[in-house]
Length: 462
Ligand SMILES: [Zn+2]
Picture 1 (cartoon, protein in one colour):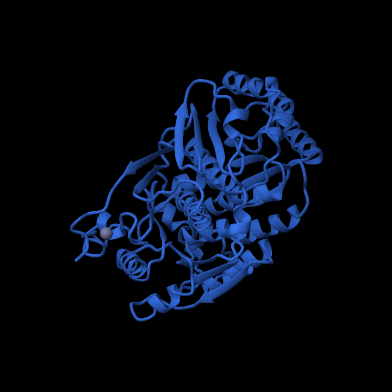
Picture 2 (spheres, rainbow, N blue to C red; picture 1 turned 120 degrees about the vertical axis):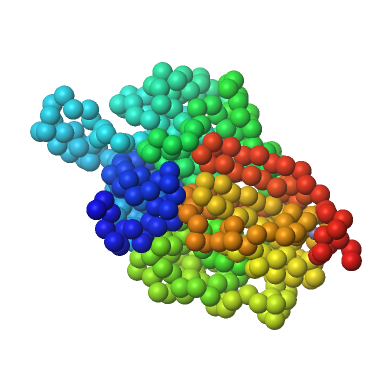
C-alpha cells in the first residue's frame, strides 16, 4: 500500500487522474519546495495551494516574516501531511550539517526538491545574488505587479543565470507592488509547474508566459521582454473606492468558490455572499483552500467565513446555507450586484444563467475538469449567455466525481475574481463575448471570441 486509506480519500480527486495516481501523489508527498516571497500576503495563496496539493515539505524565505506563524498554522490545518518552516540560516546550517553526517559528497538540497520565487520586480532583483549563489535546483520564477505577471520555469542553470542577469542590469524598476490578484493567479501557475516537474508530466513553461488580467491578455515570448516596462501599471487605480459599495454573491464555496472568495476578499469588496449547502469533507481539501481539517463537518459557508474574516476583518460576509433552486434564486440574487457561478453541475449553471438574465445581473462563470479550465463573463443583453455556449450540454461531463488537479480551479477562481472587480468598477477588459481556455499541462491560455446565438432559448429573443 502506497498511501493510507485516509490519504486515498483525501487526495481522491488527484488519484483518479491517470497521470497522477497514487504513485504521483506519493511523489508530491515526498517532495520539498523552497519558496521565496516578500511577505505573508504574497506567500499565502502559494502556501495554501502547495499544501492542498500534498507537497511534503515547504521551506519559506520571507523578507518580512510578520504574521508568518499564523499562516503556517493555517497551512498545517489545511493539510497535516505538509510541514512548513522558515528557510533561515539556522535551518540551512542544520540541513547541511545533517547531510554531511550522512554523506559528505551528497548535494545540499534533497532530491526531488524545487524552488519557487514569487514576487514583485524589486524583491526578486534584490534577491538575485542569493538565488544565483545557492545550489541550483529546478526553479520557477514569477514576477508580478498588481494585475500583470510572468511565469517561467528553469531546469538549466545557465538559462536561469541569464534571466537573473537581466534583472540585475535593469535600472529603471517600477515600484513595489503589493500582493494582489496577479500574485494569486501566479501562485496557482507556479504550483502547477512544480507538479509537472515533480511528476514528469505535461510541458513546463520554458519560455516566458506573461499575462495582464486587467486587459485579459495572455502571451508568450522567447525574446527578452522589458520587464519593468511590461509590469508598469499606468491605468486608473481607484478600483478600491469603486468596490467599497459592491455586493457579490458566490454560488458554491468549493474548488472555484474558494479562490474566487479569496480574490474578492483581498480586493476589498463591501459584501460577500456565500451560498452552499454542503459541509466540509476531507476529499475537498486537495483544492478548496478556504477549508481545513479542523473544520471538517462544518458548513462550507461557515468555514469559509471563518478564514475570510481573518484575512480581512472589514469585509461583510452573508452566508446562505441552502441549495439554489428556481424558487429562491431570484430573491437571493436580487440582493447582489454580481454573481460568481462557482458550481460543478450543469443544471445549476443553467439556473444561475437564466436568473441573471431575468433580473439583469452580470455573472462570472467557470468550469474545470482534470487539467483544463474555462472561464467566461456574462453580461445580460450585452453579450452571450451560458446557453448560447452550451445549449444542450451533457450534464455528466463536468460533475464533481471527475478528477481535477487542485490548482486548476484555483487559477479559474482567481480569474473570476479579477473579472468581477473589472465589471464592478467598469474598468479594464473582460471576458464578455469571449471564452478563456486554460490547459495546465501545457501552461497555455487561449481566449476565443464568441457571440450571441440567435436561437438561444434564454437570450435569443423568443
Ligand atoms: Zn444566450
